[in-house]
Length: 101
Image (cartoon, rainbow, N blue to C red; front, side):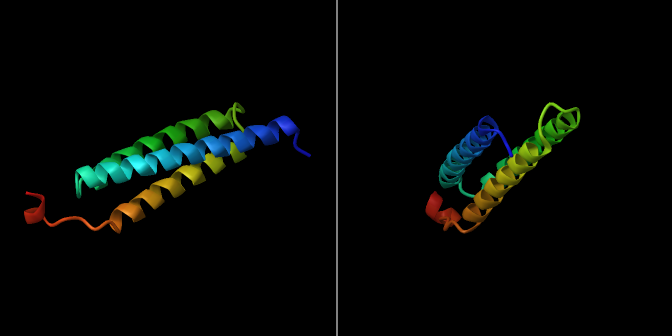
């Protein structure tokens, strides 16, 4: 049975990741609104950065500094946020080029 401290830590981590994810989604939508059609390139750079960092974290985790479940859960949450952002951006109605001018 997990210790209460571990459960509280897991809940806090999940809550923090959820809050960061929601903030990222809001910023992504604002960016796409201000710069229609440009977020795809930015999103790919962000995704590459995140994937590289999680790869480093997972390598560190193998050395015993983090539990595997924590890293796996974080990877899953972050990827779900990135996919949600991609989906929301893809469904946005953007003005045509002549309307933007």
